[in-house]
Length: 60
Image 1 (cartoon, helix red, strand yellow):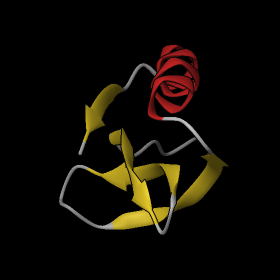
Image 2 (cartoon, one colour):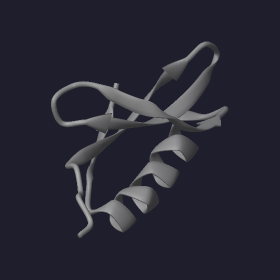
Image 3 (cartoon, helix red, strand yellow):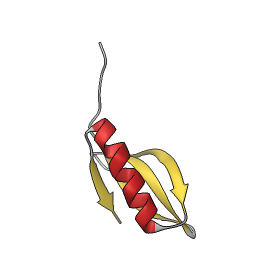
């Protein structure tokens, strides 16, 4: 049996770059999965990843 956890995809500032994070719905972070230089690119990539996991995208 596969156990799934509801997750969100968060786009947030990470030092001087933009990171894409997996985030549990209870507020805990699983980890940063991708870092890019522009906010727009991070949002575009996050939306594509969210389609795979059927998740929401939050922009901080």
